[in-house]
Every structure is written in structure tokens, then in C-alpha cells.
Image: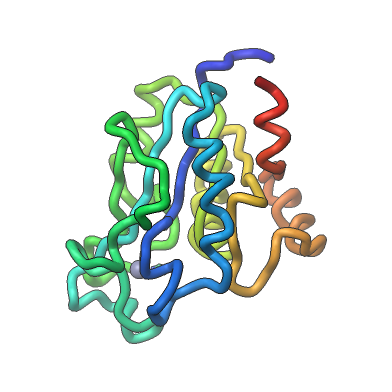
Amino acid sequence: MANLSSKALIRVDIQNDFLANSSVAIARAQEIIPNVNELSCNSFFKLVVDIRDCHKPTHKSFAKWGQHCIEGSYGYNPPSTLYVNSNIKLFHKGMDDKVDTLSGFENPELLPYLLAQKIQSIYIVGLALDFCVLSTAIDAVKYNFATYIILDACKGINVNMDNLTFQKKLASQGIKTLKTADILSLK
Ligand code: VGL
Ligand code: ZN
């Protein structure tokens, strides 16, 4: 295996509002947490990055999605079941009221950080598979990272991970897919 140290795990929008009791809650989203936690502790990755949706109470997306992920609120926070440590680097998206933000790369600090860390491959997990995970992956391909979505550590709104049409769409966009066990078995 080449370049063990050049891999980043990117965790997208694993926040209480996307898990339950909000207008943006995703059915069975909490099922991904055990896989995300196992991956987050794995030395396969040089680093782990969290992308979090973070809005002021006046964000334009609320017209479409309803209020969610308001800075400092319970819904903004990650669930207490999510593995965290002090090395995990946090990037916000959605701080500008006038901009809808699906991709983590809409935070202009993410790309320079990954390049400075000499990251070459990006493995994406989180919520929602067909929105913010997908958009982040499309941008990662655009920026020439080898880009993987770990399907069983994501939950979609309108697709599930076994949807072959969706998998073909990912492949056609240069996004590779795998499962959590594929990575754990490499150890
Ligand atoms: C948005 C989370 C998920 C937004 C969209 O536009 O604020 N947030 N999808
Ligand atoms: Zn949002």
C-alpha cells in the first residue's frame, strides 16, 4: 500500500439536527455512528476532519429546509455517541447567510489545509449521502484528490447505499466507493 500517511477521513454534517427531531433529520442516520467511530480511530488515516453546518438564525436555506444547525444550539452539536478527540480539525460551512453550502470545500480554508498536510486521498463519511457528502466528493475530485465515499458510513435522504444507479453516477464522476470493512481489513 503506497503512501499510508496521505489519507484523510472527512466526516460531513454528523450533527444532532441531521439525526433526529428537526426538519432536516435523516431516517436511521444514527446507524452510521459505529462505523464512523471505528474509522475515526483507525491509523489508516493520517488525519480526521469534521465539516459542520453552522448557521446564524437568519440563513437563507431555512426557507427551503427549515431552521437547522444554528451556531451554539443542541442541533448544531455532534451527537454524544460520536467519537471525538482533540486532533480532529473542524471546518464550518454555512456561515454566510446568503450562500447555500453543501460541499465542505465551500469553506475556503479546507483545501489549503489538506494540501499543507500533503493529503492525496480523501475518504468521506456522514450525512446526507445524496447532498453534502456527494457535493464534497465532487469537489474533492475537482481538486484532484483520489476520492472515496465509504457507503455504509453514510445515510442518504433519497438514496440508500445499495442503489446501483447512484453508485454508477458516482463512478461516472470519478468517485470511488467502498465499505467500512474494506478499510478495517487493510490494517
Ligand atoms: C444545507 C445542510 C444540508 C444548507 C443544505 O443549504 O444550509 N444545509 N443541505
Ligand atoms: Zn444548512
